[in-house]
Image 1 (spheres, rainbow, N blue to C red):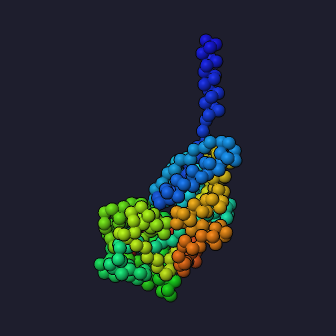
Image 2 (cartoon, one colour; image 1 turned 180 degrees about the horizontal axis):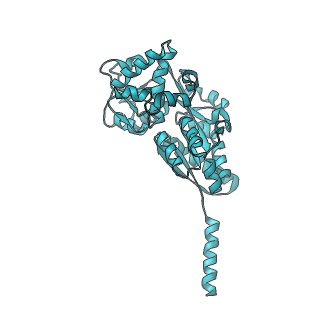
Image 3 (cartoon, one colour; image 1 turned 45 degrees about the vertical axis):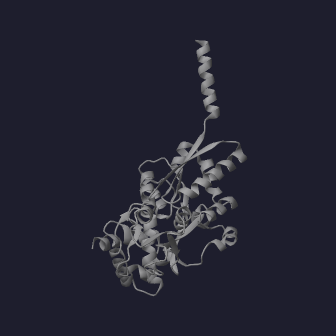
Length: 328
């Protein structure tokens, strides 16, 4: 009996010694490749600094669906989205993060950014150069559903904002969006699904998606089938991150989760962002990698729509402008 007890105690001790800390990062649909490299770099950095081996689990999907999963109980230590709205909702519906979460890290807690661009078929047969070209008869537009995808929401708001930035009225912007969605044959749930529809299924003449996703497509499939078009005006798409405070305190992972967030702003991580065609936000990194990114006349969500909360209420809430336009 003593020998069994001693053996059991030894096994339990060994298990505690070799127990591996794990954290879960719940992220948006098209961040897979960046976080594959980022996580590997962070695990190595953390081990060098602390001697501790950790495991980072990833979950990817349409950003709004991902945020709802966390609210419904998915135990995310970190949430990394492509819009602040999908982190704000964690406070509003579950008090999972503080109201001022965006003030806890530099650049609105957004260590990277992107923008909405056009991916067209090689040779650009429909001669698509600017937003106005998308509403011409016979142009098929592919984008994710703005109700479920931050990627799709940015595309919608970029299209609307292009009208306002060019001096148009709200009424003219609404009419533009009405024509825009008449040219949309299908709405996928997330950015990766929309990419599959355009690239593999061959549907549509132009894919609206993040600059980083376009670069991935060109690198993986080859530039002989597609080419990227930058409109002169587009939206600045910030990629915010946050601890999920209730989860990290419950799981006692706050220290490593905070280090994970801070690592996003390191020189190494900002260089990885640029490698994956995400625009760095740290001032030194912006200057260092400026040659990799085309200059665009950006507008922000706050500039055109007041705030993400207002854009959600007016455009994407049930019965909002998107529902009204799309139903017709």
